[in-house]
Length: 572
Ligand code: DON
Image (cartoon, rainbow, N blue to C red):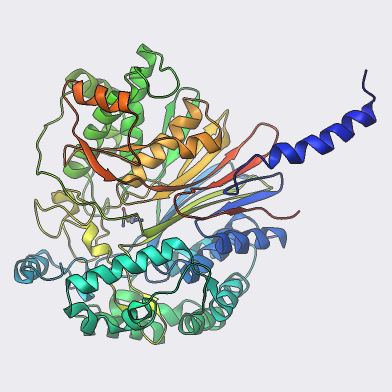
């Protein structure tokens, strides 16, 4: 028999070795976790936890840090959604700080703009008409007011420091800059129209390299104003004036009153069960939760009838997954939009009875409009936070495309979103993400464009078991879905769940996308399935950040290796 002391010694030697087996993008802790897609932003959040802040304090600080370190994806010029679990009250809260369309954003205006654009840069993607009223800061301020323990100024401070001393450029930012520069080459008029972005973050054609430190003194100025004077500087004061000026110079029609009128909305989270788990997720104006639950309901019925073996092979799972996704994305296009402007059949779409109906019908209109070039995953950022008291935050934020509309609010260095492209601005035409959108999502003053962002919390026995979300346009939904199923259906570890091959289907075009060359057997099987599946040669998926909660109290944080983030945990 080994003595107790020897056992302890052995354990002490073994445990670090076992932990070291995790890749660097997975972190374990007993004290809390922040999993963002930027190592520096995760670190900022973890330090706030270490200083006694709760998950909401950490989420706010992480978000401000992302505004500095992920200019290609997010920031004060964008908007987002937060889904959170308040441990003490055992309840969920969903906040919607999505952009709103300015008063001048009529359907007629966009029809005219689109028709007039010819082969030039699409007006819902580039320039002033692409910009929705940013909700990001209003959202963070609302989170601070209702759930935080620290003052706003204290939570902005680390981001100011990061902007002044410089954040570390990574491959993701470099690639994003190259993509934006390709647009500048494609449409030379962009160089004149969007010179600020070109000369600053795009380095006049020579973007910063991975490892370089990039300072953002102009953004530091804006953050300092916010810390010292509060959000009014952004929605009524000098930053509001700068945003309006920038949008108007770039051809848009935003007014001060648009910014003054911006409001955060609280929404009722969507809930459903899958196996022994409860899934809590984001309702409209995101389509993410509806599509996630609709797909899970169909798969859940299939699951009750067959048992999936782990992995892909011969299981029927991928075929069922694709079929379920087609239904969900077809319904997304047909029914979903801003719930404040139309009554949406959310309850029906997320009911088991409807899933039964779809399963019986099975065939989805195989309508096709050919192949589309999907954009790369750049303009969004998702992070998760969990604290030692059991609070959990899932927050997805976005400026939509790479560097949003390419419009910068000067002299504050704030890239403004191009979220107007998430509306149906041109009936029947695919948007930036190849999505066909419907009447319920038609552009209109004060409306919020339909989103795919899917911050989600999974419960087991009424306790959080997993929190996750993603970036990647419509691939957010499919990435969240598959990582979630990998964990709860296929019992994979976080590492396996995140690195497993992923597919994406969004109904139109009628093609399945993989994140890498699909296993030969699976490809063959899909080609011969009925109806047959066309496999795209494009390799695309989303970027997921997640935290798993193990029964022994361990938080397992994971930042998708596809983007280069790292989770961080408080030291105590
Ligand atoms: O809200 C949406 O669904 C889109 N604006 C998200 C765009 C996106 O994820 C871009 N890629 N990272």
